Length: 358
Ligand code: NAP
Ligand code: GDD
View 1 (cartoon, rainbow, N blue to C red):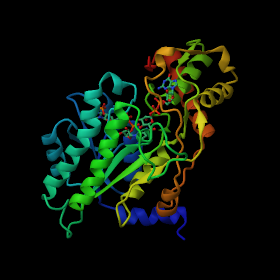
View 2 (cartoon, rainbow, N blue to C red):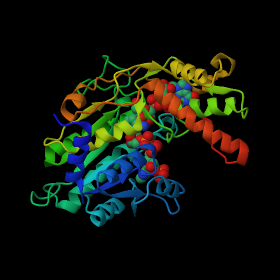
View 3 (cartoon, rainbow, N blue to C red):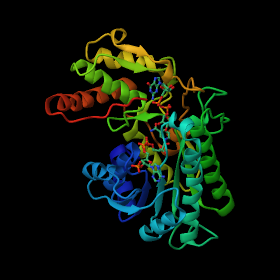
């Protein structure tokens, strides 16, 4: 049995001088994954879109030693050029329109990025490596990770959900992710590519976008505590999720690409909490009663809700040796602590944090 410290030394030895290309580098998971891979000795490139993406400087500040390459999941040529330039050993496709409500407003764009974008990335790898295989045996295949989602389970047919649970997506986001999931599997089966999908359940952190419910709550609680606002508007408090810490989940992404045989994994904690639980924990942490501050806004309730999600992460535990290290209450407290610091800078120095109106 290899201990945690020994495992990380072994991985570090194996990973020295490997190259990784991460799409979605400016997002929550991109920065944690880049930090993790750099700590293992990888050379890490992040795909950046747009001519002056303001989030580039933020991720550069968070993660030094990153390199960047231009590209957009909507532009096949840019992906071919990026893969050819970086010559990666591993590609992590994290880029997506990831906020579910936006997928009803921009369903076509969401499908293009989250569905067709996966196909474009797979084709870019195939083109750079020669069309028959994703690279010949001597130099080793380019390994591909696809960020699949528990949203694919949607209106769940069983609980907890595992790798073979049938999908019933409930949003254009979930439908597009389901296409990305199956096209990754299909390229594995058709072209012998090393492609895996991580079916990740919700994961959060102080770096989470303010439109997602946990961060909306932690930021709202901090601002209420410091007298910057009085009310927090939310939608469906009964929704239940399996929430974990993003820093833990990026370790699982990397481990999936180190297996001899490519296969898909469910990653989650196996613990369920409601949005109401999250609200209660966050307000209690700062000594306030949530009932005095939370307002239900029917406009925030979704056209088709995913009521409940819960992972069965047994395969990841047994085959990857992966375990989450942060529980949900600890996670909410970590996020409120971080937002108390942000909010006090906002109060004292006028630093603006853009709270979400979603
Ligand atoms: P996030 O913070 O919203 O980041 C999304 C990233 O995608 C950003 O870097 C964004 O870059 C990039 N992007 C969007 N459109 C693009 C395009 N056309 N071309 C290139 N890049 C584009 O998301 P996250 O929470 O880190 O999630 C990472 C991935 O995991 C996503 O695919 C998400 O759907 C999936 N996932 C997340 C969770 C979760 O709970 N966090 C769970 C399951 C699956 P810009 O700076 O250019 O906008
Ligand atoms: N965002 C938000 N804002 N959600 C709210 C609110 C609110 O004011 N009030 C209640 N909710 C409920 C939503 O209806 C949903 O049931 C739950 O809180 C979680 O919402 P989000 O945090 O927006 O996450 P999500 O579950 O829709 O999607 C996230 O997790 C997926 C994995 O299951 C995203 O990260 C997706 O990209 C990811 O695939």
